[in-house]
Amino acid sequence: MLRRLASQMFCGRVQWGRLHMPALFHTASIKHGSTALPSHIARYSSNFTCQSIYATQNQAIHQEKLQQATILEAYHLHQSHSFDTIWLRENCRCDSCYNHATNQRNELFHEFSDTHIDVVQHTSEDGALRVRWADGHVSEYPWQWLLRNKHPGDTSPVEKILWDGNDICGVSLDFVPFSDVINGDDGLRRLLHSLLVYGVGLIENAPTTLEATQEAAEKVSFIQHTLFGKMWQFTADLARGDTAYTNIALGAHTDTTYLSQPAGIQVFHCLSHDGEGGETLLLDGFHAAEQLRRVDKEAFSLLCEHRINHEYIEAGHHVVSLDPVLKVHPVTGELEMIRYNHYDRSPISTIPQEALGKYYAALKSLSSIINKKEQEFFLKLRPGNILFVDNWRVLHGRSAYTGNRSVCGCYLPRDDWIGKARIIGLL
Image (cartoon, rainbow, N blue to C red; front, side, top):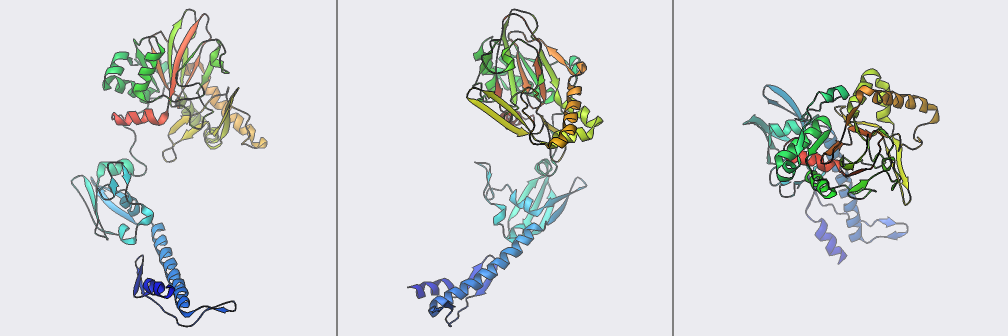
């Protein structure tokens, strides 16, 4: 049986990748210790060893080819563009290479043979790059898609406007009627556009209930369930271990810094207030961080490079994150997130004591900019006004207040509100 199986497996020509070789047979026995193997097993063993050597060599050659980038140069509107051929082939969007029902690839690059990535011919016409590959496959890439997805990628069609207190006072922020957000895409588009540009969005004439607040929030995305639940409502009763549950002033900060991915949007709706004060403080963290980058690049870099801990502690909960105060895009250097909350920052254990002086100095420089009065913008939230804050960009706080003040709100996840902006064509 073994002799017959070996014969069936290795007679004739054997294909391994692109390598073809005749089957090799050895009739001599191979000794393992003092025991001689039968000749038919010897043939199997010797042939398998030979196959393995050639297969390993062939795989090494193919791996080396994959590592050596092959660049295709193509012209569009009299401008030259370079594309790695593996990148092109793995991003072919034809029906055989890409499943348009699931929006996922059918073919994986590490399974490509050499002919998958060897270009025979390419042309640029009718707004698309057309590539014929050595295996006979033809791919077509719209230039608009190529320029949007290649390094470094097109910039967002919506440009952020960074602001300080004086700048934002001169802007007529768009208060979107509650009914427009609930009943149509135009109101939602206006709300998200304001969030993308200024980091804040406002709704007016909303029913002063938690349910209405939830209805408006869920037009943007599903609600992010956190330690505080789904929807929350607070007043100055210290019901939770958080300074928000008091009536004292709160300095500028971002929320949920203790989560590995902080909440994307914070929603506030003041349901009632019968006293004085309680104005909402808003401050553009990106504007402050860019000022630091201009005046002290080393301090800016330290806040980008060093990951530090933030934590939330109360009965039954101890949550800790580890990330930098400032996060920038790895290619463009554009700011992506500010994680700023001295209230929740835990003892710094990720930086040697001997190096902490420079880090504290950098953090103090950023704090000094943030604490300048000209950076601040105060907004009095009236019942019926719902405030949406980009928690990755805009810091918020509160002035002290008197009387009874009830606020409800929730958190929305970053990925999903940005995804909604893409769906409606803003990104």
